[in-house]
Image (cartoon, rainbow over all chains, first blue to last red):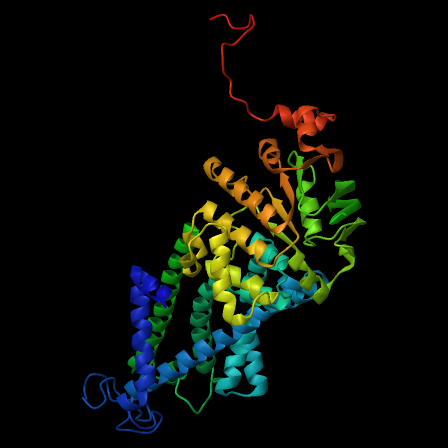
Length: 276
Length: 265
């Protein structure tokens, strides 16, 4: 966990980490902060924000608590963002490692598949995937991961190609180490840092994609998400703009937090590369 | 009796339209507990020879017999098991170690892979190896990044002797080291050879280093072996032009009063 302390040592990293910790706590304690189903009708419809102390951010057209929606929406946004990024990184690492180590025809074939996925706009891919299979949280996660794994795959492959020529890999072969152990103990850990730095950006993109899918009505209808709240408020944007603005602000803060964190992470990694 | 017999080894590298013969019909042999110095200018193919011998790159043609076995035909688990008998020390004291490794884990790997000592005794064996190369046993817990270049090369030597090999390939093993440390490392290598009967294939471009440790010297030039002979003979009385050039390149101290009419002052 030393790297986490180092990240917190940079100004960007400290702010980003602070925002992410706060969001994490909110996501974790959402049922305590605002008990009950956030989608239930809780009070009078269209209460303006800051007028009723029991609904600090007001209510929407159906009388649902906006604050409760935002608090519970944190869960969906973070869960989908992180799960999609993890899936994308995992697929990307496997494909990149295989391509970089196998070389030759396997490498060629895998990289053409990567090309194919990079050519298709990832949002369109997610849109098509969700509208064919149906909207639920796992499907949304897979849909976003499908559009995001190509970048980490490319980066991992480039790292592996460079690392496998190093003398320490040669010396691992010389002492008779098994190729699988060389791949997972010698090459993979050293190929990982830049891919992890990329993962923060994938998390941010995944959160935005999830919001966009929900906005278009392709999110999971059974959970509250910021995207669906913004879409819900869009119909009465002129009379009650706050219904769209508050979840929008939550989205912006989250994405900025993730970006700042990744910026700090990049600084720390660059510093470490500089030292060696 | 010979330990290693290299016969008509050849290797070509082609990049684009350029086709370079890195090794051209190279044959040489090595007896147990003997040091063969392999010298040549940059690009003469001596490192290629070392890497083929270590089975890091494939050869195009020729044969290698090592301890009576056809070394180039081994593969897979057989090759990995037999690799214990030939070890290598690399030039780059930093690049030869995984940057995340500790000194202890570097030495633990060969002991574990070849099951040299029972698991319970490995820690003691690591301490013994460190002690043999002149490092304190508590270095085992240090990160490889926290030890100096000379100490790293001692660790590399400890790693090489861990599997009890009969041959160690030293690829420019002291070239990156400080001159003051170089002598100590060479002394350690000679001691280990006397003690354990290890043969060395010492690859270097530096004749002054090879003269200090080699029994025989082989000179390479543009992928060919141009001269082989006893170390003293090759240095005192070189036959080939490549050997002449390498000997002329060894720096000498200029002492005494310069002679000749070229000095007007």
